[in-house]
Image 1 (spheres, rainbow, N blue to C red):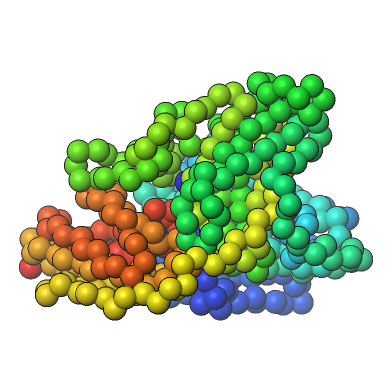
Image 2: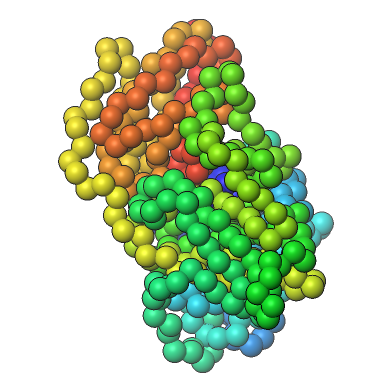
Length: 403
């Protein structure tokens, strides 16, 4: 799935979560600030009132700050909203997709929400600052009040679900294993008649939205359907075929092969599950003016566990290891006008780094496990050159200096 995910940066690693600290004070138990000196943007969060009580309306307040601590008021409109907020309970049984709106006076983004039960919840604030990449900020909150019984996450025996007279069938294009890129194809039917649901309406500018969260809540993907006519396969970005981006700046490109069939009742999404384990997926559709969330639980087995071959790094190349921890190193200093040779080595299959993309250079290369793949070009301008995995969930950069 094209991660709205940009994924810049879906901050889902253990190290990222460690960077999130709660500043709890007597007036606001859930006040939370993410601090990380190397990050470009962060979110200050608070609730009004400070204690969130089950069954009572609470205003959730998000203030985006840049690296210098200044409030960022100018967010891009992505799928008709400046900020998407996904709220899930700790057991993933509850799911809410709402949209904070800007308060002009202080630049904060606010939305009212009623948590039906006490307990632990996680907030995913998804936004894209102007002239920047997408950020997904994770915030943990505690809701006071009676807690319901926890729901044990169980994988679905069948990928066919009916919710409010809408039957949805999910068909993976390939075996679901960790690190395997594939499309998830969804067919929608009227549950009463069994006929295709041709009356689906656009929801936030698309026929469907998809959210995927791992059981441990570390991996998060907010994605949208592939555009009509997009393709799956091995898309070479060597100047002969350009990457495709939607007007909102999110990467909806796919790879070359057969064009996916699209209709008013069928949607497809490109994704990869980065690690083994249980994941819950919500497919959201709108019908008759009402948003319907259809959940699926997927058990993702580990990928190829065969020992990887040792990296064969060409002379003069900079080795970049690709693993579940991301790119190492993730920031590489280079010089303007001097050729760069990068040797990518994917250590295992339990990550979504199956390909690497340099969008500005129109370079996209597959990264098979245990093989060394080189990327070569000459930077022509000083600044930063970003690269990412095909799902845009792992990111790195070249820092180009003047000679």
